[in-house]
Length: 161
Image (cartoon, rainbow, N blue to C red; front, side, top):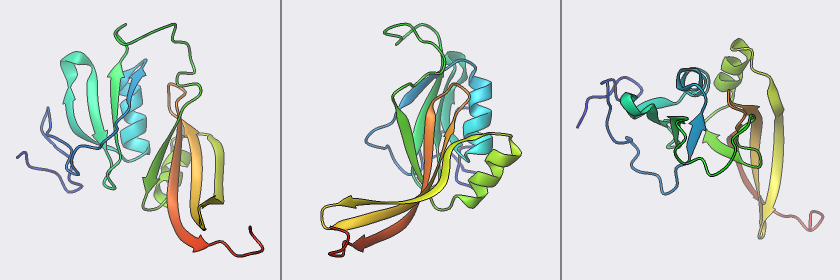
């Protein structure tokens, strides 16, 4: 097992498997400039490197709460059609975090403009509502990222039905 830094991320050059285990679904984003994307996902959104393959322009990132995402420098592989900016049109990635305040401050400091929020929403599922505080931002390649803080759940009252 590779030693980890204070946040639990792999400090070695190549890293190790994600400390929270392998997620059942992990998206890989094709990016125009891996260094720029890493600066955003790591420096602003607080992800850390689980492992990387620098020779392939690839990095596997994770957050302490267990969110995972892969970034890969565009090379022509896996591009099934024309890829034009903004990438990711029609997709949004939701990342649950323990709190939004630190991320919101990082986004502001980095000069990032929010696409939506901050806002509090309550959405119904079955006989309950789940609440979250959320913000939406575009990453450097135009992918939409929703960062959400869980506010819990509550029963639906007859006036809500």
